[in-house]
Image (cartoon, rainbow, N blue to C red; front, side):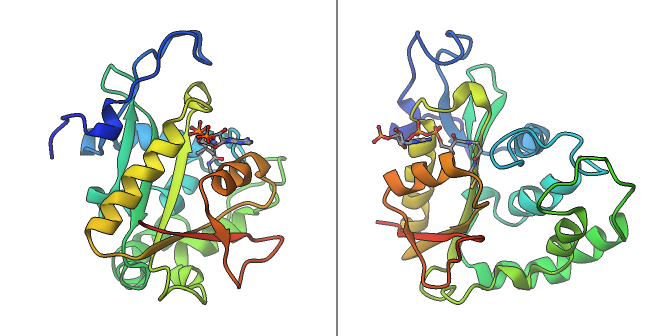
Length: 229
Ligand SMILES: CC(C)(COP(=O)(O)OP(=O)(O)OC[C@H]1O[C@@H](n2cnc3c(N)ncnc32)[C@H](O)[C@@H]1OP(=O)(O)O)[C@@H](O)C(=O)NCCC(=O)NCCS
């Protein structure tokens, strides 16, 4: 992998941006192993309906261990980050091309260690999240939850998160375009995602990008999909 800027990556954002120019030239590049901790932090800081989930659960490692790190381990070639210009990752899109194969890998390679590290929910934090710690631990231990009814027509799935200073600057659209192109190159026809129904900003973003609701989507557990090309 190289850090050479692709067409999408070459798109930079000028002054007058949401962070007052503190991140003037973000660009997209492939994930590299040194980004792992940054990805964990971004995941945690955007995991509460799009906002900061720090301290929401008894262990801040839980969210990344369920929604980010397995993806980096299984499919680092389908992970892309937004580099703030100093080598640090400030946002990412991660995905897998074949959700069925990923579930089998997760059962074999990820779930045993996860269960050992997180055998049961820890002490209450006093925050009482809607997605409880027991549900989060179950999600890490039992990947069959990813086998949605439409998994064969939409075999890939993704997660995307940007730190607040990068939001609303077009990088989310570019990250999705980058992943869709990478999936299309591999012959994957369509990609899906599940999301928190309370995250109305993310829903507006996906609607704008042309994602549609899948037949098994529920109001309390939206499932969206889109073709890769
Ligand atoms: C949701 C998220 C990925 C969107 O990325 P982004 O960089 O902020 O979005 P962009 O600036 O690329 O917006 C792309 C398009 O969506 C539209 N859009 C984005 N957010 C919107 C909103 N809240 N309401 C209406 N339209 C919106 C933009 O206007 C833009 O339209 P255009 O390209 O036609 O001009 C990002 O804000 C984020 O990471 N949020 C926090 C974490 C999160 O919620 N992740 C998703 C979990 S399911």
